[in-house]
Each structure stands twice: as C-alpha cells, then as structure tokens.
Amino acid sequence: MENSNKKLSRSLQSRHIQMIAIGGAIGTGLFLGSGSAIHTSGPSIILAYLIVGLFCFFMMRAIGELLLSDTSKHSFLDFVKQYLGDRMEFVTGWMYWFCWISLAMADLTATGIYIKFWFPSIPQWVAPFVILVFLYFTNRVNVKAFGEMESWFSMIKVLAIIVLVVVGFALAIMHTKVAGQTASFSNLFSHDGFFPTGGYGFLMSFQMVVFAFVGIEMVGLTAGETNDPQANLPKAINSLPIRIGLFYVGSMIAIMSVYPWHGITTTASPFVQVFSGIGITGAAGILNFVVLTAALSATNSCLFSTSRTLHALSAGGNAPKRFQMLSKSGVPSDSLNFSTLVLFIIVIMNYFMPASVFTLISGVSTINFVLVWIVLLWCHIKYRQVHPEGAVTFKMPGYPVTDWISLIFFCAVLVFLLVNASTRVSMIISLVVFVVMLVVYQVVYRPQTTQVPQNK
Image (cartoon, rainbow, N blue to C red):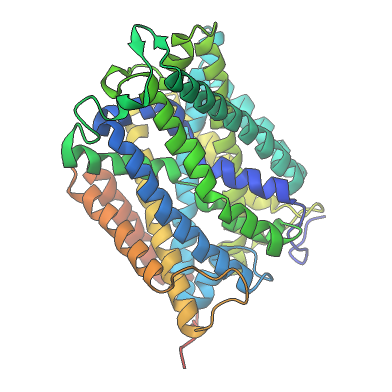
C-alpha cells in the first residue's frame, strides 16, 4: 500500500553521497567530446575547466549552506519555494525535470550505439529498452539500490580517468615516444602557445566545459535521503576541487602532454588514442565499456533526480498529488513511473528522429541547467538577506562577493550562448520554455496565497 504520509527513506550512506557527487561531475562529454573541445581551444581548455569548476564550487557551497540550514527539507526545491515563492519553485522544478529527461534521452540513445559496437546486428532500440527496464526496477526497490548502482558506475569512470592520468604523466615525465610523438609537458606550450586558437577559441570552449559539469548539483536532491546530511553533504561538496583537478584538469594535461593538441583526433575519443598509442590491446573496446557505464550512470541519475523533483513539486502543490505517494520502501513510485514512461516514449521516438534533433535538445538541456544554477544562487542570496548570520556550519565562503560574481559569470555564459550562432536556437527555445512555465503556473497552478519571507 502506498501513501503520502511516509517520508523519503534516509538510506544513502557517506560513500553513496560521495560517489553520486563524483558521478554528477563526470559525463560522456569528457570521454567522447573532449577531442573536439581540445581542437576548439587547444591547451587553454585547462584554464576554462578551472574557471567553470571554481564557480560550480561556489554554487555547490551555496546549495550546501541552504540544505544544512534546515535538514527537515528534502531538496533545494523546498528552499526555492520558501525564499523565492511558489512560482519560482514551479518553474525551477519543472525545468530541472526537463533538463534530466532530455539528457537521459541522449544517453539512452547512446547506449544503443555503444552496444552495437559488440553486437552490430542488434536493433538500436533494444539496448535502451532493456537498460531502462533494468534501471527502473533497481530504482523501484529502494534508494539504497540506486546508491549502490551509482557507486559502481562512478567507480568505473573514476578508475578509467585515474589510469589515463597516471599513464599520461608517466609518459610525459620519461619523454616516451608515442606514435612518433615525444610525450612531454612542453607540448602544452610549444605548439602555438597556450592559447593557439586565440581568445575566441578560448571563449567557445566554455560552452562545452559547462556541459561537462551539468548534473553536479544533483547531490542537492539527496539531502532528504542521506542518513547523516550534516556530515555527508559537506564531504561531498568540499571534495569538488579535488575531483575537478583530477578528472578534468588532470586528464586534459595528460592527453595534451602525450599528443600535441592539434594531433588529437576528433573522430574517436582521446582516451582511445592515448591507450592505443601505448599499445594497450582492445583499447577501443575497453573505452566503449567505460562510456557505456557513463551513459547508464546518467540515465540512473535521471530516474532518481526526476522522480524526486516531481515528489518535491507535488509536496509544494505544483504537480499532481499522486506524485507525492511513496512506496513501502520510501520511494516516490508514481513519480518514478511517470518519468520512466516519458523516457519510454523518447526511446521510441529516437528510432525515427535524426541525430541533429538530439544535439539541439542537449543544448537546450545545458542552458536550462545554467538557468537552474542561477536560480539557486539567487535563492541563497535571498536566504542570507533573511538570515544575515547564515547557517551555523558550512557557510558560503566569501559571501556576498562569491554569490554575485558567480551570478554574473553564469549570466555572461548565457549571453555568449545567445550571440553564438551555433547555440542561439537552443537559447531561444530555453527562454520560450521558461516563459511557457510561467504562463502554465498562472493558468493552472496559481495558489491563493504565496508567502515569501521578508528581510526585517
């Protein structure tokens, strides 16, 4: 029997939260898209990762202070409701749901492509269907099952990156010959400098770098289901700089030290190029397995985040009440059912739709994530206006300067995406979706009263 009086299960342990945070910071973009990103900006992409990573860290610290200021709340959407009102909770929640649904659409489609690497005769829709059914029942069991699954997915991705960084640095230190090239850290500067494509190429890289970080805020949805949020959330958030340094900056340095930036192929993953260059047999197959787990991780995270987002929206009166229902194990089952059903529709549509459509939707998803980040920073500013002293523990460092410069940075990213011809359509679609959500709220979900705390 399912009911709406039960509470979300607090079954996620410290290692689950750590690996969920890590998994949110590693996507298929790092493994597969880094080659084209490097060609766009050259070694300067390392600086882009550092800059975006810094502002993502500030954003995560803002979320952390909000969550730990009141652990009775289950997610950051509860704080959006309290400090920005029902309208912004409705818009932010549904946009966040759409962000993950569209990302999962692309990743589920990718799983069909990855499976065909080993089994070319299998129709492309079969793998997404089987994977979605498997992940659905895993998430249906309880939140601990999700945590275990995400932990293993993340461990595989982390291991692949650690091996790449260790091997790449060792080759560079020993000046080893790899495919006729001498591996050396000097490759980062000796081929037309650190900014070989100029300032424009450097700015163009921010689009791809920001995409690599989407989903990093998902740890903010786990607050209601971790058994010790006061200890686990700060650990996960504070480890972000280490993850940025190792996973992104470290892997980029390793790749471009082994091969000069202009010698890196864009038709295959740079990871495959490095592993194949040093003679690892079956490098393409090994990496195909890694990117498959990355896609599985993204879909797994989608089912978790979208079901919890719908549960929070329902609790706030911004979605049908049945999405608030919980199973005996404390899982928002109706919310999970709805998100899975939407993904099944997408899997069917993927069979008919061209790849260009998915590229467009991925761009829309990325922009929507940035919009959500801006709302969360705005929410933290409103929180500190109401509570000038902030939380007792885990305060946002450098407030209010860090909040405002982070807001300005992410707004600048959106402006650049609007003026950039390749992302202008995605930006316009995202803004239209935002406006449509506002209209839907006014017509369908407008509450009688909306109370937002005022700064006295």
